[in-house]
Structure formats: C-alpha cells, structure tokens
Image 1 (cartoon, each protein chain N blue to C red):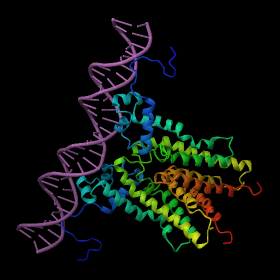
Image 2: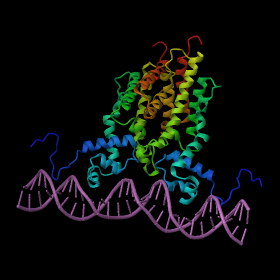
Image 3: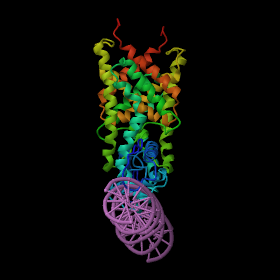
Image 4: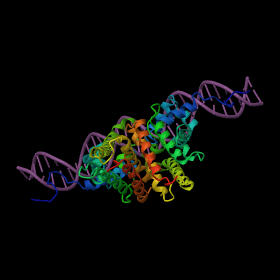
Length: 210
Length: 210
DNA sequence: GCAATTCGAGACTAGATGATACATAAGTAA
DNA sequence: TTACTTATGTATCATCTAGTCTCGAATTGC
C-alpha cells in the first residue's frame, strides 16, 4: 500500500504536476510582478490547463501568489538567512547575505532581480495589500541587519559610539538597490567588488583597540 | 494683441488646465506605476474629462507617460543634476545628489519614492519598452557617478589604485535602493545619517598625502 | 455674418481581465 | 455495483481596458 510520497486519496487524479506549475508561476511573477501577470499567462505556463483546473488547484490568483512567495523564500530567499544565524560573526553574516543575494539575483537560469523587492512595486490601490506580503519580508531583513550591527556593538567589536541605524541603513539600502542594478545589467563581479568596498564601512567603526 | 503666455489660436478653447492635468498624471504614475494606472483614473484626476478630451490633449497613455517623465525630470528629477556639474568637487557632487534624492523622495506633498526607479518596474512583455525610457535615465545617473569617481582619481584626490566601478557601485546601488526604503517608511533623518556613513567610503580611498 | 477650427459629451468598440457554472471523466471506498 | 470524491473541458460571466466615433458647442479669422 505504500506509494512513496504520493498520498493515496479519492477522486480523479490531477493530470498536471502541481509543483511544476507552481514553479512556473514563480518565474512569471518574478519576471513581471503581480498585476501584469495574467491568468492566461499562468495557465499557459502550467501547460495550458483550463480555468477550472487552475482554480481547483490554487484557489485564486492572490492565493497562488502567496504560495509563490513562500516557495520563492524557500528556494531562492535563503540568501539572507545568514542575517538570522546567531552562530555567525555579525560582519560575516551581513557580508554573506549581500554576497549571496548578488550571486543569486544574477544567475541566468531565472529572472533577474528579486521577487520580494520588485514583485508588487506597481500596484493599484485595491491591491496594495499584496505588497504588504512582501513588505513584511523586507522589514524582517532590514531588522536583521540592524540586529547584526547591534550585536557587534554589544560584543565590543564595533565602537560603543556607533549609530546603529546610520551604519545598518547603507547595507539595507544597498540590498534593496541590487534588484534594480541587476535588471539594468550589473554583473555579479561588479556587485561583489562593490560589496567588498561597502564592507569597509563596517571596519571603520571597529573599536580602536579591537 | 499681446496676450501674455497664451498663444492665440483658432477653435474652441480647452476647458481644463492642461498643465494641471499633466501634474495630476505625474502623481498617479508616480504612486502606482505605468500599467496599474488606468485611463479612468487619469481622466478622473484631470477633473472628469471625457475620453475625447484626453486623447485630443495627450494622444495616448504612452505619449502622456513620456510627457510625465519629462515633467518629473524637470520638477523633481533635478536631485541628481549635481553629478553632471563639473564645477563641483566630485565628492560634493555625489553627496549632494544622494542627499537631495533622499530629501525629495521623503517630502510628504507627493508620493514616496522615485518615478524613474519604480515607474515601470512591473511590466507585461509588450510594455517593456516603457521601462526603457526610465532605464536610460538610471543609466545616465549611474554613469555620472562613475565619472565623478574617475574625475577624483584623475585629479589626484583619490588614489590611483582606486577601482572606479567598485567604488561607484555602492553609491549607485544605494541610490536605487532609496525608493524602496522610503516606500517602506524610512525617514529623511535615517537616510541622511546613512549617507553620511556611506560617504566615508570615499574618504577611505583618498590618496594618502592629499 | 460665415467659414474654419478646435473642443466636449457621451455612446460605443473590441479585446482582456479574474472568476464561475455545469456536465462529464476518472479515480477510490464500501 | 454503487456511492463518493475530485479533476477536467467548455461555455460563460460581469467588469475593466485602451481607444474611436459622431455630433453639437464655442471660439477665431476674414
């Protein structure tokens, strides 16, 4: 009776691969954003499935987008997870997050840029709540960068006089700027060199005798 | 016969203020971006003018957007003009551009963020050329920042060993990140403090004996 | 006064949008 | 076999989209 990962259940089996369909939706939303991506495009990218199949599988465009964001965070959005890894030295946590973001966003196997930053940047008033889904993610990364700086001040690595927000904002604003740079053609090498430059800001704030 | 600025011409006079209508369109495109802004919204913001009046005055949505971009650059987009002012010391040119951008974008009298960076960030494939209008402006600012760094290297202010792209990209990426930060609630004070921090990168690359 | 010109109100077009209804197909459980 | 469950194909929905057309109104030049 064991059928591996497939959970036996009643009813006619689905004829398309839901996971592959979801991944196709990730690519579309990533490339175009929420509103410009139409149901027709989505259904087509899922193998020309019917509207009935689409709504049965995903509920609505908005519900699909929420799933897409979760999937994106799982597969691609781990670039900033170092920010939340307390076992890493704070400076390394920040540099790793920036580096991995730059590398991921410039990979040629998927759309350039970042779904979390650009996915709903153009919205009609009635869809503003869609951007809220992404905004909370951006806020989390921003806060995590701040906490890395705070940790370094607390540990004595950075000077007690450090203005936490004034030092963390250049890193977060740079992070939010990467997607636009990448979409406009910035290469991985350019970004990595820029990150190396940027990280010297951190070193400038080190406690004199550390 | 002199009628001031009004050019006498035949035909029934327009009943709405074209300039005010254009400014209303600037605000809409700025807040929502190109595609989500509908003709209905535009006409409504122009005083409930008819479609006939709209098309007679502006030609099409795309033609209006091009006028809107030109108007935006005129009124709000001068924040980065210092980058092209050869009479300014390069460091001051860069710092001024960042500072003025941060101040402008956080003004509460208009939508937050920047039309040039966010105005067409979500586009269907058939409207990709709309973002090209904005992309060329972003490229111009990026190049201007690079030239400021180059000028400073040439003048001896910055070390000959300076990697121009590695030093200019943190500034441009920060600039491209400001709109997202502002939309997410960053204050002018936070951004100005971040800019002060960021500019120390420049000083780090100064020629030792200068 | 009259022609030429321009504008405005509103009806209208074709096509796209996200989403639903309904009958049928294909599987499981008893 | 029968009941139940779920998926699919097709037709369709109301609404919105950018854009046109017709026709009457308001102005200027002569």
